[in-house]
Image (tube, rainbow, N blue to C red; front, side, top):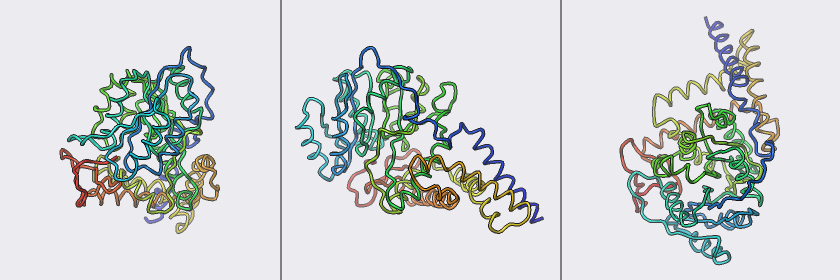
Amino acid sequence: MIATLAIVTACTALAIWIYLLAMRGGFWRCGEREDRQPSSPDPVSWPPVVAVIPARNEADMLPGSLGSLLRQDYPGPFSVVLVDDNSEDDTRTVAGQIAAAAPDRLAVVSGTPLPAGWTGKLWAMHQGVEAAQTKAPEYLLLTDADIAYDPHALRQLVRRAEAEGRVLVSLMAKLRCASRAEQLLIPAFIFFFQKLYPFAWVNRPRKRTAAAAGGCMLVRRTALEAAGGIGSIRGALIDDCTLGTTMKRVGPIWLGLASSVHSLRPYPAFADIRNMVTRSAYAQLHYSPWLLAGTVAGMIATYLAAPMLAAFGSGEARVVALGAWALMATAFLPTLRYYRVSPLWAPALPAIAAIYLGFTVESAWQHARGRGGMWKGRAQARLTGLAPTMHPGDGTDRADH
């Protein structure tokens, strides 16, 4: 009986990985990359673009991120609106100093109190979009305060949007991968995201799969308005993928891995990445204990069963389990290459997946304690139908981004 159960479990794991490699949009190949796409032609005229940056307590990030935007070689009209989301550090001062050096290209807006039903980031973004209307932009570059752009990045984003008629072009900013914690966990974070939202499927207009990467989203303004504006997703904790889904109802979108857009935010310690993941993992499951239970069972079957049987099983079950583990490691290799991390990490994917499973369970536990969505001292995840949670000692009742 035990031997039969072992072989069935091993065959299930093998079947899962055959499906993932052969029938899941080729997500593991990392083929939807900015540097692997054919170059789009220049538009007849370069449309006006306004970048919108919501920023809370980002003083240390702004010189790199804002500076990179102001150095864009974009041939058309381009300006930046930064919304200071009630920062408690020197965000406003640093942004003002940068604005003084580029008064025609950078405006700094003070955020107003958060209305009920909005998350902090989206309310700040909404205010930035409203402020940008005076420039009559054709495109809005919705970006984060910790994202840096190569000088040609905006030009390439607009080329693709114009040439392919996309209402949204988004790049998954390349995250830092320098510390040991980053090397262990960051490539897998991108691997899991691509598995959940295969980029090739996102990019096909006839596929329902939709997603975006919040650090870099170029949206056509009229299409955003047709979709209901930022207000249509006002309560979304995972705002980027929600916006991607909303925009795909209006027109075609594109999502790819970046080579010209980089995250400046470091994750030097294991706890830093844990906090990033636990902030929104349970929201991805719609705060459902049933989906959480299904996720735990699915992760065990997909990532943990094969290495356990390979290590402790015997006979045919061990052989099949080794095959499943080998496919798993093979699938992980392109993401490791993209991040220039040693391929020796590939067999460790099951252990890394177990860590992420622990993060997901912790995310649910934090939500149950009223601390869901913790970001810079504020709990933003909400119980269904309730207003944003106030964390004790926070001093406000507004959610953060």
